[in-house]
Length: 415
Image (cartoon, rainbow, N blue to C red; front, top):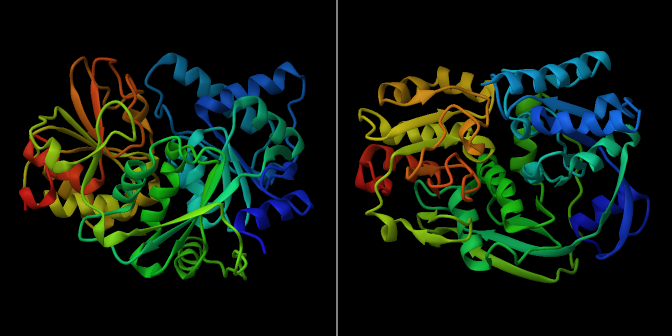
């Protein structure tokens, strides 16, 4: 009897794996973006091997500093662009496509794959039932050249999501609740396998957020067990028919398990400067805010923009508010549905397809002593700009309500 993690890694390694085994696996999909890609290529050049084992399995997307805000960023992208053209990479996405993790789930990732990305938020792809890990430039360069890597089979943990979230509660609040309960280091060496008891009550956008935050829980991977929501998402995004997918065997053994009642999850915020410094919004309602950011690979999806637009409709923001859909396709759909117009009329600044403020890169860097509420995934010191700034992490509803109120607020306070 095997867990989904064990099944995926057994298939990829050609061996019968168990937790703790050190194995070599065939990687189905490998990816990097502008910043990490530059270092991957540096490693390849140092060993004198600019070769790609399987070009069709390599995805490159520019996202961290796009369009380039300075000459150095432009030079980095120029170098990666030259590499992609030289090797005629079929899956190269230049400026304007979207954040790498979003591009991967929209276009490439399939259930049961082993996915490695030169970026820690590779865990996002676990929402589609893939075993996904972030690795450093040297490891990714080796994968690009050979198609293989080694890893340790993690301990499996069973997480059950039961019931239905209340209005405005999303995957972000679920992630923050898990961080509140378990803290940021509990899942080291663990693969979290997530079972959704009522799949239609927890849509793919929410799953992508929880999977994205899996690395903030220090999990080796976070995998949603594929179900009808997985199938519907992939088939609608890519116009394909999904064949039978792997699931855990009945009776598979887990080191532990936890059931989260979704209807009990409250509006939560991670206060500075740790992702597991989680508090209720009510505890922070007197915190005045300078800037709100709605976007990133965590919460830049269509449902996030829909929530923000519904809360902001007919109102004006009191803070600077930056909104960045995660990809061109999300932006285009939000444009068609009127969400972008609503957000702009409320006073938001909107662009798309860049990490921007999340990494303190551009398009909204926090200044000294400024307070930011962000739907991104990290609130470490200096993450979004000045080391003297303070970053609070929230879901899209709290972020939108905060922008309207000028202080940390729940949606009900502004509706």
